[in-house]
Image 1: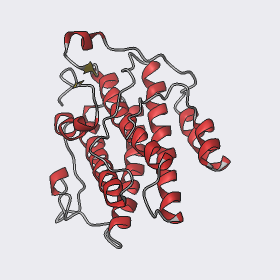
Image 2: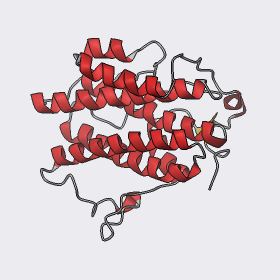
Image 3: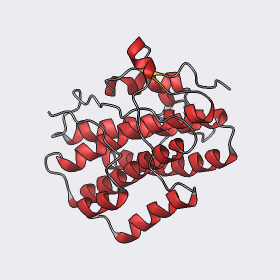
Length: 243
């Protein structure tokens, strides 16, 4: 399988919508989200100097660090769904194609949104290189199984990072995004096992509490321990806030 470098700076949501057949209404909705947050310019993506010291890609500190953390995860998801839609698995149905295309457009919009938001507040981390060598993109079970892990992990990551954000604006935006990630997780789960979309019983590893009806919450260290195997660069989260 050919590995792909995540390159988002030259890939606008409109261009993606034109290539993937997304509707104008979808694009306008995504663009509205970005414009509503006052994001109008695209920042540069510089390689973090700490990489040369083998400390990994430094996410930074404070709210910018938390946003970079979310951006790293969104880069990973966006690259994954880009590959899924570019080379669909065997015997994919039209319904599955539509669902995965919708998710791909959401994840691309999320990644671009974070990149622009961070550029207006601090230093953006570099483009990351995905490592999807463990995924068989021709296999439905492999693709949807990985998608389920990414989506459930993403929900737990946003839930765990909420308390680390000091800006009410950023916290509100994170809440809007995690709710979309939860919708993704539900539909992926249902594709794998019809009727299981609301099942929290199998999410104990992500911190969910089925008895209380609570979704999972994981720390950045816990999330990166799982997500790291899909990213070639080492991610340095040591400067993130802890409470």
